[in-house]
Length: 88
Image (tube, rainbow, N blue to C red):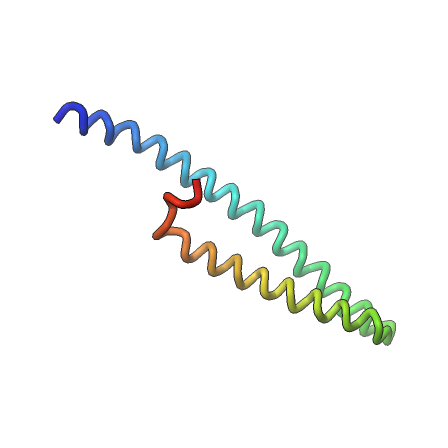
C-alpha cells in the first residue's frame, strides 16, 4: 500500500506540469490563430477597398482558411480533456 501512495503523490506534480504545458501550448497557438484572423480580415478589407479582384480572391481564400484554423483550434481545445495523455 505504501508504494501506491507514493505513486499517487508523484503523479500530482506531473499532472500539474502537464496542465501547465497544455495551457501554454493552447495560449501560444491562440495567439497565432488570432493573428492569422486579424491579417486575413485586414487583407479582405484592403483588397475590397482597392477593388483589386485578382488579390481579393487570395484574401478571401486566406480568410476562409484562417476561420477554419480558428474552428479547429476551438475543437482541439474542447476535445483535449479526454485524451490529455496523448499530448505529452
